[in-house]
Length: 221
Image 1 (cartoon, rainbow, N blue to C red):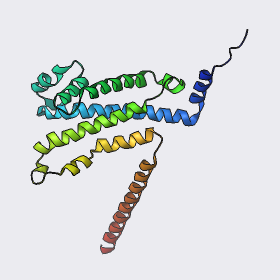
Image 2 (cartoon, rainbow, N blue to C red):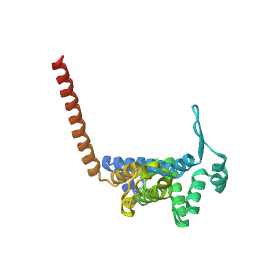
Image 3 (tube, rainbow, N blue to C red):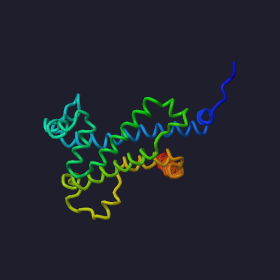
């Protein structure tokens, strides 16, 4: 019996799967993609649910009004798509954005349900292009929401309206967090490492101050 000769693709696939560095990076990219997708869902769904909530329950939290069903959920049978269409109708997104969102969702299903193939086959990869599109759409939605909704209903902006430049430079925690995730997925964790070191310094400083204060209090007793 003749042993089949490995093809170039077969050899490359084994190299991709067995190389610890490659496997680790692909696992990170897959995890980041799934996390980023959930944050995009939050940007699309949670803000609208909150906007259309008009009562509170200790058991269920904020309860959405009937208007949410009439003005949002009626746009599509899938809630995420319905919310995206609401943002499209409101001028935050375009028809092209919705097409990109569809591609993003399809790739999300591939990452979630076909992960072994993504990790072991050279014919499949976690799409960093789609990941960057998730980031771009999230930025677009969050900045539009700040300009068109938060500025009109948030009392914090009653006394002073931000300038166009300030709005352009505005960054939600979600946007900041996602930007770090995208960098890590692309193999660059330098910014994350920099932030971690700064956090450690501030944390140690705070602990030292607390210790010094406790020591001073002890001496005065």
